[in-house]
Image 1 (cartoon, rainbow, N blue to C red):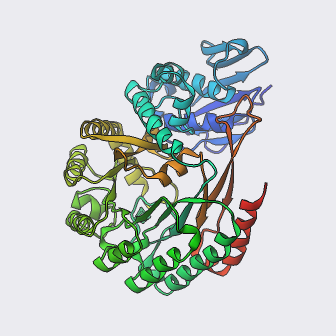
Image 2 (cartoon, rainbow, N blue to C red):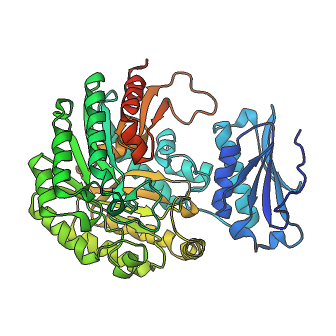
Length: 503
Ligand code: SF4
């Protein structure tokens, strides 16, 4: 069935090859390989090839350059085989998982057996843990069927319960709005967003704000949805100069379609962009929920990753916001920042808890291609990760749960080292509706601004053997480059009007 590929240019490198026989689940196979190797797998005809990465020094490669596995699906069986002697298989009639997930499960457990490595979320890669938690009956099922670690299975269940409470209180037909301001005071070394440095784009900022307001003017009156939440993110929206920021916020709230939203959240992510005047503008327009995100309270790390503020700047911005009446403040932390130790991470978290913000979001570092982290930093942080990131995240969940915070939304990114998770924790009753709507993929989102992704959620009555959920999602991307967005904003508006009008 499968064709053997001739050895190619990288034949000196240790590799893992998974031959696909009788199926074409390239992406699920890539997801699992990426987990074990930390490398980006390559699809070839009927096989996936991946540099061995962190497995390269393993004894498995002492006698051969390539580790070859076969993942086979026939009418009778699903099986994964290594060197004709190690294998995992199941009869089709006994299948309990969708086929694509069974392929992943087998590959994960077989690679785990032959390499001795396990990962906290097992074969749950490329899929939201809460979605799977919603399908199974117990935490044990996540452990048995997917290889998820017990504490993570518990977190997935806790998060799913809280996510469901938020979704139950939200109309399935309502729309959630996102507005993106893709500019920041400087670019963090780990940044994977499209954000640009505002000081270098000063002249563009007023035209960008005009374009976003124009897009809203064109689109909002044409779509007949009830709007439930509004999230203004980026980038860093508060990077706009005070006068422009006021014009922007007033312009946003001048739209009558937004007059009944249940929730408005504004990212004031970088403390060095926050001024009393900007916070007053938000308060004057009824905003009481913001994000101030230090990522770490270790000054040396802040400097290392190119953020131009100190821990003290964060604390004073936080206190000012509290004093001015912001009732819900979220703070983000990242585990695994380059050079940061577990003890520095723990101190940051404890210091943040002592300020008692209503929401604390804990991210695991994700290293996407757009980030400017150098290869040496990436390698260094991978090694650190092996020792530390898992323990940082475990410390965070134990500490936050013991301090009365509950997890309410969770997502994983494919480039996050070792498949770690990002979790939003909150004091009960302070959940951010937008975050749940967005991350659960259970509600439609209309995005304004460059790089935003709009999506519509439809019930799916034709769920197939491979279906991951009972909803169908359609997406409508927006131009990423701000200058092109400014030029083509009317085309973008028309595209979104059509997207939200189609049956
Ligand atoms: S604040 Fe966020 S969006 Fe801005 S550069 Fe840093 S990581 Fe990127």
